[in-house]
Length: 229
Image (cartoon, rainbow, N blue to C red):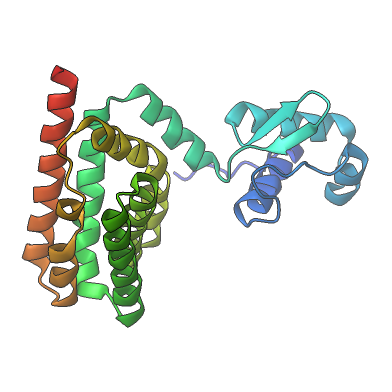
């Protein structure tokens, strides 16, 4: 027998509306929320209801109360906060295994679904990687490399996969930088994913998966060596 649907409380309704304003970009990370009186008027609620809703979002990690600055937006989504909290509790290897799962799925979907704009975006990021490698610029290379992976995930045309991947980008960047800085013989050119791009262009699913497996396993070996030292 179906249970009767429970009606949301006023606090829950305000929380949902505020989450939507944040996720839609109406309030961006770093923005200060309007004054209490203005928010009370906009949402049509009492001061206590508003404060309870704001308190819930502070506890969830979306908002942050700063002395002298009021309440500011700390994160763009509750989902992102939850992912980051889990990553903080996880090892580098666990994060790497999640990366492998996400990128392997993204690669095979991209090989099937990519369009010309996807190919253009990935090609541009590969060119940026090549330019950074020629200059030996670590930060520029990292930025271009992350851009390539995000472009590949976007080419999967799976919005949920893209959203999840977006939230592991920063710890992913940190792990790559750690390897690059620790490995004296680090090869920039060897880390540019020419073959993966070609596999996706040719819509060769198995080749795309194989290339992801290869570079992730190579990365895993480098991290193990660093940890041993």
